[in-house]
Length: 285
Image: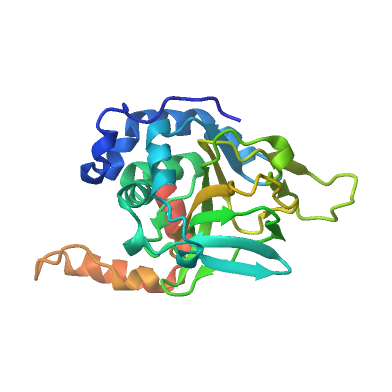
């Protein structure tokens, strides 16, 4: 678990949050420093690659975000079935200024560059649709059974790779439940089974790789009636490696120049599997 790194920029100007640039809320250089120092721990973490980071954003910013969330439950999409009981607010067009700005900050270039360095995954793509993501509210009695996330974005045809969860629960008490569980993919009763529990406290960010990541919060939330377990979730994707997909790409084409070289590259793009190009790129770094 990482300490408060004071990554976010100063708190001045937060009252006029609607006019601020989302990426200015995080310091790109400090983010890269954290990624460089923690990427080995992240990539070797068990039961699957993950990190827990506290104090990532300015507290006043998150307080404004919380105040921006609608109190009317009709604006939240409800999920109520044997596996989950929660509400989700993912319509970016309906977000108030602070909630919208925060969502865009999580999809900004500094955040993407940080995630690429931390996870070792290149070519990360954010989801502007916030499909199945966004602000989530779990009221008393709510829960989310252990599960593995969907693997493909239906609309964008992209492969899901990373989850980022930012908790928005001031003064959350352990006895209220809602702890995030991370599990290894074996029998839950097996002696070698790994289970980690993460308290959903204010300004805590959890990042983890999603393929086959078994997680959830099974214990029903037991907070007071006027409270709820709040978080913002953001999912990140990559283009699936399909053989021959590079054949459609080319550099700037000046007619009559280097035609033989371009032809050779185009043929190679069509017949060589993607991992050959990835290996070549890694050796050039």
